[in-house]
Amino acid sequence: MLETNLEIMLSTGRFSNPFMASTIWKGHITFGLISLPIRLVAAARAETISFNQLHKTDNSRVKQVLYCQAEDKPVPRSELVKGFEYEDGKYVVIADEDIKKITPKSAKVMEILEFVKAQDVDAVYLESSYYLHPEEAGEKAYTVLHRALKETGRVGVAKITMHNREHVVILRPSRTGMTLHTMHYADEVRAIDEFRTDSSLAKDVEVQIAAQLIDAMEAPFDPEKYKDNYRESLKAMIEAKVKGEEIVEAPAAEELAPVIDIMQALKTSLAALKKPPARAATSAAAEAASEAASAKPKRAKKAVGG
Image 1: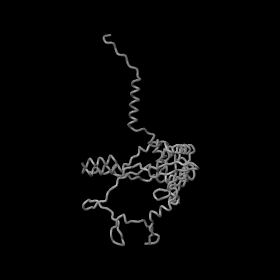
Image 2: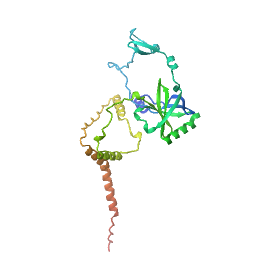
Image 3: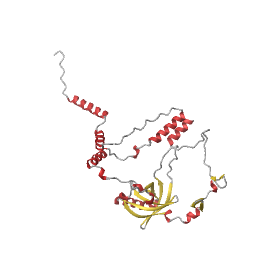
Image 4: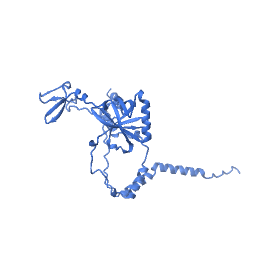
């Protein structure tokens, strides 16, 4: 029974919360005099394996207790209120009704403020991604906006309030619809003076060979190719522990020395990519030999008793 439950957890992803395509936000998009009803659905969710905290002596689950320091006793969640510490040890209580009074119109209406070139948006500002679905009454306006953005190479910049925060968002046309990305504000992105390169360090010939190496390693983007090997190893380790099997230690990572001769390293890397695999080379040689043998003229057989 234990193994069956574990197999179900491994196959259904119950090591983490299952992804549910529930509506995150409902409202309208407006640009100019156009208004269309839409809803947001989370486009991605990180999958991870979570562990429970156990008491070391008996492996029983432990839980966090909310404790009142003044009364020196635990308190239930029903007795909790929000508070903001405006001075050391002094708090002002904020009720849900207080927050509702200052909720901006972007809680229900997402107004597109401007359109910018897609290439001008630095990816460091992007935060979370959502699929933007039109309601039935807004499908035509949605389609018009989607096509117009694709053909002009623009993205929309708008504001939306959700999760107790007003976000600046990017509306981007994807292959079949529109995707919304929440953004970090400028004061949230760390400006690091040291984060820059000295272009004089790179020689033109080194850059040219690096470009050749990049071309040789080019491939179509396919996210299905990339797997979380660490998560898969964790699942295998847990399954082995449940079955009482020995855990095989993974090989240690190779210690890499700093590259001294950049040019030689680039040339060697490029040559290794251009060289066909040994098995493929052997197979090709065998095929060529077979074709050569079949192309030779056959000798006529001697007549018996002639």
